[in-house]
Image 1: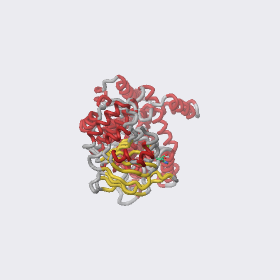
Image 2: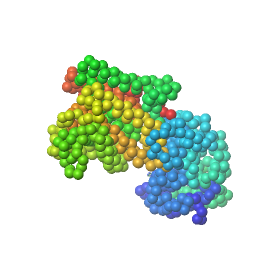
Image 3: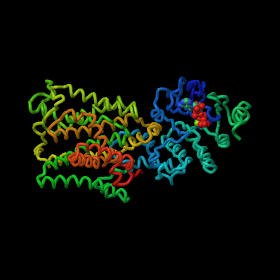
Length: 250
Length: 345
Ligand SMILES: Nc1ncnc2c1ncn2[C@@H]1O[C@H](COP(=O)(O)OP(=O)(O)OP(=O)(O)O)[C@@H](O)[C@H]1O
Ligand SMILES: [Mg+2]
C-alpha cells in the first residue's frame, strides 16, 4: 500500500445538503490505469477537483508519492507531479496550441521570473513542447489557435499540457468525450503505452475504452465508492450492474 | 502572446507578415510625429507646443505603466494616480529640500534633498514599487469590481494624506522653482526636456516589449487569459500578477516625476481619482493591451484637451462621446482602428 503513487483517504465534500464526496478512499499504483466510473452527477469531477486542489475538501487526506498534498495550492500540486485534464477544457483560447504546452514546460523548468529572453525563439521551451505534441499526434496543430480546435482536440491539448509537466500521476476527466470513434481508438492506444510512463486516474463514460484500458476500476455512485476491483470483478458485480451499467450504459 | 509590440529596429526587420509591418510602422509614425512636432514647434519658437508634446509623452508613459497591469495583466487598477502623484511628490519634495538645503522629509540623518533628476527618478521608481507592492498584495486577493474599488480606495487614502500634510503645501501643492537637473544638460530648455521624456518613453516601451515576450510575459499573458490554466501548469498566478503590478506602478511613478518637473509644480491634483480615470481613459482610448496604444491615446487625449478645451469648457463631454464610440465600435481603441486587431501567436 505504501508505494501507491496517489493515495486518497476518507475524502469528504458537501455542497449544502448534497454529500458530493462521501468518505472516498482509494489509490493509484505505479504503472496502472485506475478508472473511476459512475453515472452523471456521481461526483467524479468533484473528486478530481479536490485532488487537483481547485476545490478544498471538507475533510480527508491526499498523498502523492508519500507526501501530503493537503496544504498545497493548485500550482504547487502541479509542480509536485499532478497532471490534470479538465472535463470542460480550460486552455488559453487565443494562444496557439504550442504556447499552451510551452507554459507547462516553462513551469517544469521553474523559470517564470525571467524578464529578458524571448520565449518565441527559446528552443529549451519549444522542443520539449513539440516532443509532447508529437507524442499526442498534434504536431500539425502546433500553430493553430486553441479557439479553432474541435472539442476533442482541446482535450488532447490538455493531455499534452499535463504530460509536458512530466507528472507522477495523470488525472484525466473524460478525455475521450467528443473524440469520435477514430479519435477514441487512437487515444486508447496512446493511453495504453502511456501508462508505463505515468500512472493514470481515468474518468470515462466510454465503457469499451474503460474495460480495455483499466487495470482496476472504482465505481462511484452518489458520492460513494460502491465497488473496487479489476475489470472482471466490476463487470460482474451485481450492485454495479444495477446502479450503473444496467441503466444508462450499454 | 499578443504581437502588438513589434517595434524595435530588429523587430521591424524580422517581421515578415504585412499586418505586423503595419503595426510597427504605425507605432514608429506616432513616435515620429511627436519628435517632428516638438522640433518644428521649437524651431518656430512655440515653446508652448513643445511642452504640449512633452505632456503627451509623459501621459503616454503613465499609460504604458497602467497598460502593463490593465491591458497585459488584466488588473483594472483605478488607483494609478497614487503612483503618478507619489512620483510627482518625490520630484517636488526633493527639489524643495535641495532648495532649502535641508535633509529629505526634514528627518535628520537622511541625506539632503536633491535637485538631480537621476536620483529623484530612482527614488520615485523605488517608492512607487514599494507602494504598488503593498497595494497589490492587499488588492490582488479580489477581482472584478472589488479590485477596482479597493485600488481606488488606497489611492484616495494617499490623496487625503497628502491634503492633510501641510509641510508640502497640503491642498495648495508644492512649486518646483527650478526644474531639476540632469548632468550638464540644460533641462530648462523645453526641447531638451522633451527629448529626456521621449527617451524615457522609448526606453519604457522597449523594456515592456522585451518583458512581454519573455517567460515572465508568457506567464502574465496566461494569468490574464486563464489563471486556472496557469496554476494547472504549475505556476502561481498571484506573484506573477503582483510583479507586473509593481513594475506598472514604477513606470507610472516615473511619469509622475517628469510631470511635476514639466509643470514646475506638484499638487494633490496629481493624486486625484480624476487622474486615475484620465490615465485609464488614455489606455482605453489608445487600445487596451496594445503596447503603443497609450501613445496614441495620450496624443489624442492631450490634443482634445487642448483644442476642444479651448472651444468649450464642456470638452470632457465630447471626450466621453469619443470614449463611448471607442468602447462600442473599436474595441482595440484608436490603435486597433489604425493597425487592425492584435494578432496572437
Ligand atoms: N460547486 C458546486 N456547488 C454545488 N454543487 C455542485 C458543485 N459542483 C458540483 N456540484 C454537484 O455535485 C454533484 C457531482 O457533480 P460532478 O460534476 O462531480 O459529477 P460527475 O460525476 O463529474 O458527473 P458527469 O459525469 O456528468 O461529469 C452534482 O450533483 C453537481 O450538481
Ligand atoms: Mg464530471
